[in-house]
Length: 430
Image (tube, rainbow, N blue to C red):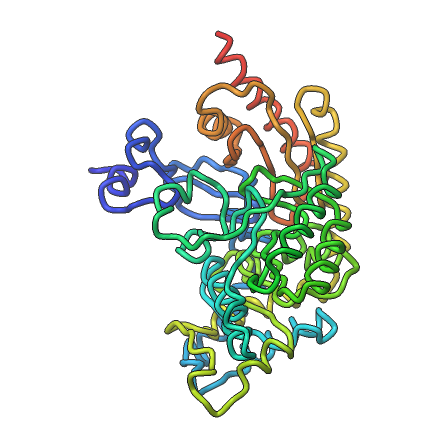
């Protein structure tokens, strides 16, 4: 019989994959998941160290999440959110607003992270237009930023492997120096932003930023002080600020919203996706202010925000998200702090072998000096022999595991990563 791997290579166009490589590197055939583990069709297990692209918070087949979805499935699987409403969506919007102290009082529902970015960019521009400022149509992003791969989101993304092929199709965003704790350049980065905003604020609609960690850039980390300074600049020059928390929200950095650590005024937009449903169903959300919302308040349909998709505010996804919030209401962040400490202790001995071992909450990363060619692929494949499913970004190895880290698990992860690193580097030397 044809294997699942062969069938997949023939019929499925895999994301973020050069399909020709699947001849030599077949996709791992996963049959089921339980807790932090994924099991292949032969019964081998792998620790999901990257949370299946950063979405899984509490492990696979989590019973409270599944129970919430099943209960909603028996009541209302879906209804359009145009002209209708339902309890799961309203409750979710209310609870997220409460987590911002009411500063972000309006939630728009999307399907995935890139669509949330598109929505926020459109809302920013359109709100300025509705207020008689149509010239404010330019966007600003940070160097090495990643915000998604649809055309609008790609226009504010500065990872060349994703955007170069489509460059002729993209809007021209301003790309400003990004802060990087390894370089100690936060003051310089803020000065560069000030220079741009001083020159172009009459034409700039918004600045978009990944708070505290630039994920696809290689888990580049910087301090909350940069966010506070950035918020002060956008206030000073009358420019919207979008906090893209798609990867770093939902407790990943130690607070529910990464932005909370800045101790600054809330941005004009906060975007959530990935972990908000605990790795069960696709959903994204755009939280915004009364001021932005008021710009669209009119009987004139052309002043309305006429963005939608068929599954906007899907009740099943909203039920899952409410179950996620239940977990945080019950003290998940306290558990995360203890789990983050376990990871830090377990990985501390590795610091002498790698560069820039760094951590923010439940995200840990390090760089491999003089990494060999195809390092990320080599590491990914070698890790499977150590029961580890992990995908480095270039020469950066990172962990963003489910929130299920006890002492034994932390020790296992540190040992598996160290052994994998040995295998890859020794193989190259051999």
